[in-house]
Image: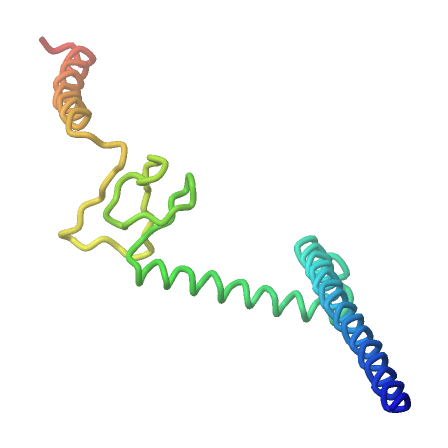
Length: 162
């Protein structure tokens, strides 16, 4: 019976030892995974720095990667513009928030939204000026009406007519 107990004790000790090994290996694998992620982050930062600053451009591999990166960046910007068009929004120049195309001011920060269009205006479309108000428009119209009269008076004075 003592022989059976010794064997059971040995098997138990061996199992405990193996379990500790497996746990230590798993712990080290997790740590290596974390360290690999840190290395990838550093590679990303270095690569970004090299590409943004045009370093090592004489190296063919770096030049090829820079070209690929520029193409991808252009695709991202194109997709972002298409998304804004589909969502019918503009981007606020003040805070970067998405603003409905019908808004004259940003809902978040109040910045006037100036819309630039690459399409020509149709005859029935109206240009909207975010700084325009009816009151300032009436004042400007009154000034414009007054100017021709003053201009005519100046011309009469210059020609000597009374």
